[in-house]
Length: 200
Ligand SMILES: NC(=O)c1ccc[n+]([C@@H]2O[C@H](COP(=O)([O-])OP(=O)(O)OC[C@H]3O[C@@H](n4cnc5c(N)ncnc54)[C@H](OP(=O)(O)O)[C@@H]3O)[C@@H](O)[C@H]2O)c1
Image (cartoon, rainbow, N blue to C red; front, side, top):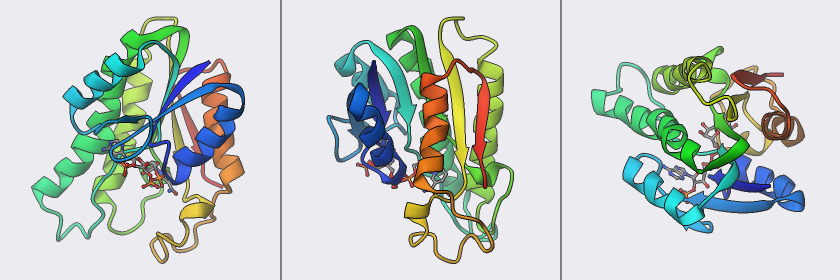
């Protein structure tokens, strides 16, 4: 299997790359590092990426940003960061990437627990995650039968606990192993249109 991991150098993506790299050919893309550079916030950059990667068996996105701030401080432009990057970035990966998938191929997106269980300062990030869930449920109805798509919604992962210290009061960190199993289920399983929630 030939797998492209966008964000494969990040906290979640590097764990995915380590696992899938044992058995499969893994290509990593990021804005500043990896085998290919891409900015998913720009569809032209995504289009150029797929020309370079060629045909794939799986696309995993473990990238995408949204602005975290109190609702009273978020500007309209702040919301557009999440819309352009984490939401439309992943929608465009599906729009443009499906043509590069071999029959039976899969696309795995990343959302997060905030879709169902938001914390303070996440009116943008939570909204984007919820939109990704609606997108996956709807797009599966239109996608060609031989392409699967799922979204992994993880809680705060153990390796990111320090980075988000104080933001998730009372939340139970998700082990990297448990998070990984959600992506394995999407890539190696047969399910499609699934929101793979890993919240505890
Ligand atoms: N960490 C968690 O606990 C957690 C839980 C649930 C969901 N998530 C979601 O999972 C995704 C990955 O999280 P993470 O914690 O692994 O993030 P991270 O450590 O910041 O890594 C993100 C990776 O994506 C790349 N990237 C960021 N923006 C990009 C863009 N516009 N285009 C292309 N590549 C880009 C980064 O590389 P460059 O800097 O080189 O671009 C980096 O390799 C995010 O969408 C996050 O919201 C995270």
